[in-house]
Structure formats: structure tokens, C-alpha cells
Image (cartoon, rainbow, N blue to C red; front, side, top):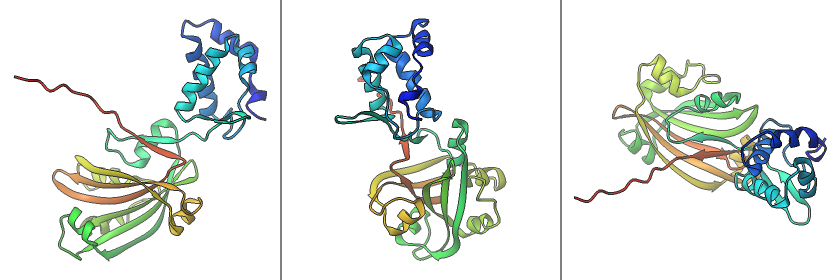
Amino acid sequence: MNAISKLSPAADAKVVAMSSVPMHAQIREIIRRRVLDGTYAPHSQMPSESQMMEAFAVSRITVRQALGDLQKEGLIFKVAGKGSFVAKPKAFQNLSRLQGFGEAMAPAGYETFSQVLSMRRVPATEVVAQRLQLKPRAKVFEIQRLRYLNREPISVDHSYFPLEIGERLRRADLPRRDIFVILENDYGLPLTHADVQIEAISADEDLARHLRIDEASPLLRIERLTFAGERPVDFEYLYYRGDAFQYRLRIERTEERRA
């Protein structure tokens, strides 16, 4: 069943009529809720503007304003000559807080799981040694994981730790627990802050295979160095699917005060 057949004129019109919230905002929220809860399936066709005008008893301008807001949010997309379609909603993580993947996703109701791809001692690359404040070619502990969100692969994580921390993680329940939680609760390492860099890259053959996407598909590559106090304890390369995940950050504007 597509989104068109799930439009309920009587129910929707009643909701709109009984509220003091602007009409376009109500329609936007009704559609957003149905996209996010799966009532309107990804890539299904949305009702036409005429059908929505009739269902909600509003003008074409109001319908277009609601659809325009949803398109800006990335919840729907338009195809010339065919109408509007439901986009696949993206999960997101707020960068204003230092959280593990599971910590960030659980409050939104997402199911998370990790598949450990490898755990081993390796010589630190120049970058890894510098970030962890170790001597060049010093041994570090590397953990590679495939992270799942609602049972779909969402990221490949390459994490590097000083040996004394990494060897302890070998025995941890990494499939079900965030490393951040383990470091703090099990090892007594209070995490204080992280340095983060984000860039767009294309998936190579190995990443594409793990993430079940086409080679050269867009990825978000996050480089993150996490500290406990002033000591770096975790350096990571995180490769997120660009079609299914996004990071968000709120930036405050402050005025410079002149004497």
C-alpha cells in the first residue's frame, strides 16, 4: 500500500480544524510522523497536491509550504513530472555531546549492535602514534567493528587504544556495549572531551562490501580523538553511510564585547 492510499481525509481534516497551530505546520507534522513511524514507506509516492488539498481542506499554497518544509528536512524528495516521494529517514547524532553510538541512538528508539571484525596488536602509523602521544611505530591495540542500526549496517569503525586499555577490551562485550561506557564504568576512565574532524569520501571496495552499498557511494569519515582528562585514550576513524546517517551541531553566535 502506498502513501496515497493511506491518506484519511476525514481524520486529517478534523485534526487540522481543531488546532490553533498554523495549517501548514499541522500538515507537516502529520506527514513527518507517518514517515518516521513507517506508515509512509521509503520511496512510496506521496498524495498529489490536489488530494492533500481535499483531505486537509486547505489551499494549494498551504500544502506546498508543508511539503517544502519536509523537503528541506530531507524527509521527501520531488521527481519532475511525477510528484513527491518519501525519502529514507536518516538517523542522526548530536555532536554537542560526547556519546557512544549506542548511547546516542537508544533514546530515539533505535536498536544497535556491533559485529567485531578484528582485534589485534599493530604498529602505530605516524598519525595514530601522534594522536595517542606514543613513540613512532609503538604497538597499539586496533579494534575494527561493523555497527548496525535497526539491523542494517550503518558504519565501519577503526579504533586504536594504548595497549594496556586495548588488551582489557579484548574481554569486553563489544557487540552489545559502547566502548565509551566500558571505559568509564568498568575501567574508571572519566571521558572529558574529544577532537573531531569530518569529511566526505567515497567508499572503497572493502567498506562498500561491509556496508552493503555500491563502491564509490558517499560516506562520512569522522576522525575522533577522545580524552580522559588530558590523556588521549581512544583514536578512531568512523565511516558512516552518507545515505542513512548525519551528524548535527548547534553553534551559538556570541558578540565580542568592546571595552
